[in-house]
Image (cartoon, rainbow, N blue to C red; front, side):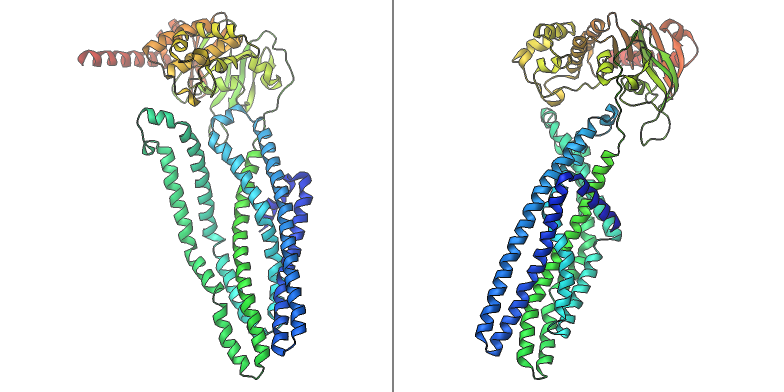
Length: 587
């Protein structure tokens, strides 16, 4: 319960100036809860007057019951209006706060969190808090006050009948509690986590529908999404089965009160006070279902509190991710990029991805990073672009730690082309033009031409103004890579970082990409990550990276004859190429 209270307090803190309206709505809900019980008292008094033969008194109590019911309705509607208005603004505050926080997170964080996951964390959870504040908070407040008043009322007119009603209420609460804690809570937590995973994968799946249709694939082929659907179904079934006994007991107990009242009324009527017993029996017959309705509201309010706790925890976890502070320096000096005793570990992972790494990129030279997969090559590229901040040591640009540079200054100094370039849902022209503000159409066309994209423009139905779908599924991997290179050419940064730009290209596209890279890297400082060793034969410098450390440093000629990892890799590369050639000849 303490955790739930902290979650509610945090949510009210996010409400800002609307917190007061929320609390006012809750106050109205308390008043409404008290008024909701009054008509039952007046109905009892009305029935008692009728049975005693006093019609005037019955009319008075009847009108009192009507007006208190009306007052209850007005208070309840007013409470919901207040909580709804506050909830809408609170959800808005959460979205703005979360999005403002997300835009300051390290760029590398987005490489480990899918758009579906981020959207679910912000959008779904903020909507959930909105639902709880708007609808459930008032009911929860009423559910807290009403049982106290109801228990008092149960013993006012007939203690024995009241005791019967209280017994079923108490047992139903125990049945309800059995579904809210222990293993059941664990099942519910798992169900919510599987739902989050499914939502995340669903977004990714929808974005890839055009690709799946192109290759005549079904949902079964999209294994990640299919697995989350199955896991979510299993978790939902597991949670439902865990609650079946408690739910059955709850429903049975809450609806059994009337069956207990009949024999008690018969026993009491045998004592001689038939009219008094009948009045009490009518009251408890009407009041017992109201208590059952109260228990239902309490049960669903408890479930809502569990959902709220999960939603607040999820949003809080996002807000607790450390932001990347932006520096203010705009001077990059001579523009030399250097690593000095850099060590780095990915958040949540054991072991260092980069360990005490030091090197300097020579201006106007091409430096290649090679080494086994997982050795730290791509991490070095990410650290150079400050996608992550180093754990120790520093990355400097022009003698300044990149953490002290303004984000715009750092990004203007670097052009990074990844092996999986991202294209946006806009025209080909807009996809390239976003690399530099105020770029003219002629400059965009020239950049595309230098990137060997003339054939792409000619093939597309509307040329430069053809709209590219998400993930660029109108284009091949090599064509998307050439467009990414056109962006880098247009940006015209002094330092270029290439993360295996030819990784997904066929033979024809590889030739064109190499020509585009030649145009991009001309006269610039280049750091390239190479998996195809034949592409870095002419590199000015080759750094061999293994287990996050530089194990060899030199040019191709020296490293290919020097005993070490590079020589072994070069030998294996040539043997693999020869094997493919022989296989082709045998075919």
